Image (cartoon, rainbow, N blue to C red):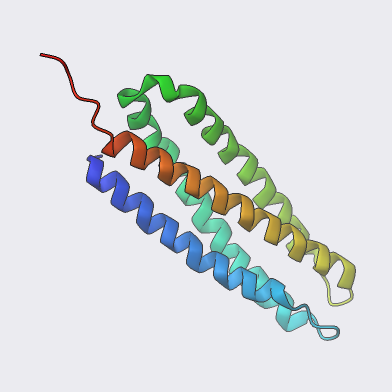
Length: 150
């Protein structure tokens, strides 16, 4: 993938994550005291869109994304790349755990609904931080001109 393509793709993906995260943040802002069913349907739908996007996003980053090219250009950044790659696996685990919780949510589960909201908020914060680190890494690797001696 060309340098500009990687940066543009990562930026577009980051913007999509922001849009999907904002929808989820709106949902978790207020849990109805009664009649949870419409809210449950809404949050499940928004989370499923977020989940599908994140899983595809992670797979693309690891398969055809920036990780390989960052390592080719700057092998000394391997520990940072490995940490981000490991975070991908942790994010998948968190997303899957939340998905299971949301799938089991019923109209009577006020406490579980509030717990899911807290966990979604935490997940969104972690994803935001992870995306920021990826953008910083790509920006550093593909815009830093070290130069050569001739």
